[in-house]
Image (cartoon, rainbow, N blue to C red; front, side, top):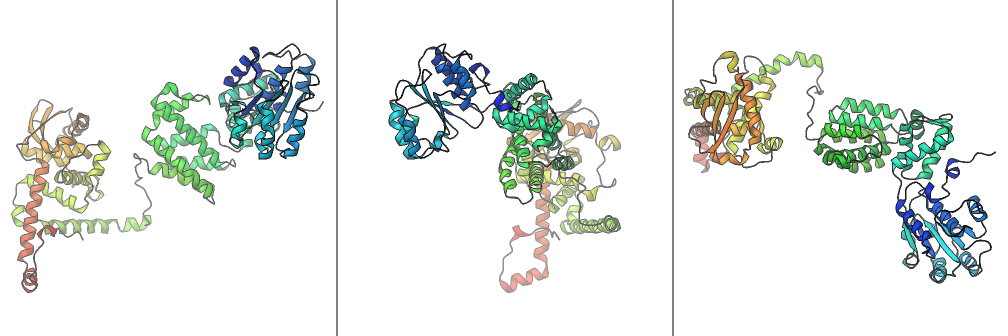
Length: 609
């Protein structure tokens, strides 16, 4: 006996065997049971979802010798002949091969004759959208007022191509794509009846590759049985389909959550060994990101159609919501790159790397290749340090005046802050965005914060002699001895950045009660403050004093000088001194005298070379 493919062998013969399409089945069953029958039915949907199958079952229900019913007897001559495809009153027509108007007219010439055996003469026209406009025009009158013994059943994958005059004369049923879970369950039941071994993961892979088509899924099962030698194994199905297993998509996303470029590149190398379809891999990645985003917002609404809810929830906890949205948007835009690129793997790698390095939380590695070999770097290390030290000393000599060298220690401390700030100024808005979405900070406090951060991160100040010692190790400033003056010396030694550093820079020390420090934040800077900053400020002070410290901040007018005020005052004094030195220069005086020039004092600044 010849082998019959699964898609034909397991084609449903009644409505109870149909997988899915409950919305269509309900309408047809109620119409048949109540004998409220229309003369023309149109079934639409993508390939393999059951359009022709439902039309044949409907024809069987209409012509069953037991009577019109939604449950045909399956035993009478009409039911048997329709199942075997030899019922004389069921005319199946392929519109793709009979598009001419002459074919349609020949067909309609026989409409007037009564059925030979059955109750109704049924015309089942598949891919009806392929008919020509003349054929549709010839069909219109008969379709609107057919003889009572005629029923038209149309099936199409492209209903938009049908004239509106045809659509208005039919009952239209839109068949949905089947979900992977439904397909997987149906394939499992078929394989159990076939007494074949299978793995659940393999069925999920086939269901995903079928893209909602049950016929495609059964065809892939046939192919997998041959490929895996009588069974359906996961490894064989993955190799047969040429797609990475879903677990590799999870590993890719975990690698992106850990921000490990090396892990991602290694996974792509593994994928490349399987003759992959990178577009399919990207689609799986985007689909998973979509489900992760839903799981983050409403876990109960997350789609478990792939049977991988634990993995989705795990990814939802590892990747931030901002990164999920960024990865998805960049992935959608990157689909075009894969299509246009000559090397698809390269485009896929670049897309994932772009997702990673442009995410807000990505930190650039410190061991990047600088273009200088290790030997030359070691040889020039001492000379580079010497040049850096010379540059810093030169800058200090240029901007310090003798009058400022005699200033108290707090002002010298703030002067050092401005020296570093003038070397590498940064944008305060970038710092603010990393902590919170407040605004209103003034420029002087911004420079104090940037200089404070630069002192912490400058690799040239990494020696033990240059680093400020903590109170716990030197006893220089303790919690009990803290005062408005010592606060000015303590501030630049705190390990704190961003908005929290800006708040402290504009805060006036009031008092310290036990392990609680009280500050007053100036009104002009109150817009950047929120209670969410207090834990970060407390942590920085606790780290300095080596004890648990809590912080209380009150919004009021600052009575004492804050680190930001000190920084601004010292800067202004230095600028005045620089202007005086510039004006007293003989060359400048000669230029002003001979050319009647004026001095733009606001443009005078330390030499940055």
